[in-house]
Amino acid sequence: MNRPKVVSPNDWLKARRDLLQQEKELTRRRDELAAARRELPWVKIDKNYVFEGPSGRVTLSDLFGNRSQLIVYHFMFGPGWQEGCPSCSFVADYFDASIPHLGARDVAFAVVSHAPFAQLAPFKQRMGWKFPWVSSFNTSFNTDYHVSFSAEEVEGRTMFYNYENTGKPAPEVPTALFQETPGVSVFYKDENGDIFHTYSVYARGLEPGVGAYFFLDLVPNGRNEEGLPWPMAWVRHHDKYEQGVA
Image 1 (cartoon, rainbow, N blue to C red):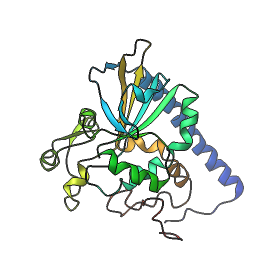
Image 2: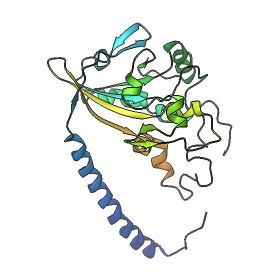
Image 3: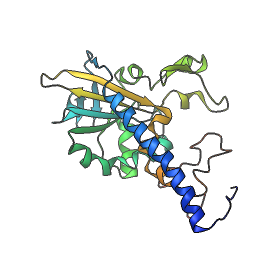
Image 4: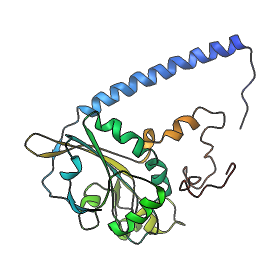
């Protein structure tokens, strides 16, 4: 870390007030983007998606419960994987605390993964999570929302992810790891029971859901991810960190 210069309290206050103006501009711009997001057109869902959960079959409509809005987190957990993605697990550690507050604002929340439910359940228990988690293994849900890809798509660099064709970013990493990707999709159900897709976000657009990043961005060393193979290479499942600083 290159240490900034040390100044007097008065000089620090002036610099802090200058930065505050930039922070306020960012806050106002974020509010404008949120309003524009809510004005996006909707797409009616014609497919009857049926997932597998702890009690058996569950439809997309069922995931709403008695709410009209639904957030789905696309968790990276592919068929045959021994455990879920560490980065998605990093994000998922914040879900349970949020769900009661979302429910108070007419929002349901669920996690969907490509792996069969029999693979998801033991990992969920290990991590101590309570949020609703279902499998899309026997549906086209993951491919329809562009979070699961074939080996041919990865190798051929024809993955359509984050609204553009992308490719395998790190040749030394096994192809299978790029066949599953993270995202969030949002749905609305009207009084007639019709369901609409209103929004999806991927890649770094998911960062606001990571509470630890907010705090890391405040400290002198920041996220300290420079020089890593990829930014979140330091992240571990919360039961795998050693004591002390990694």
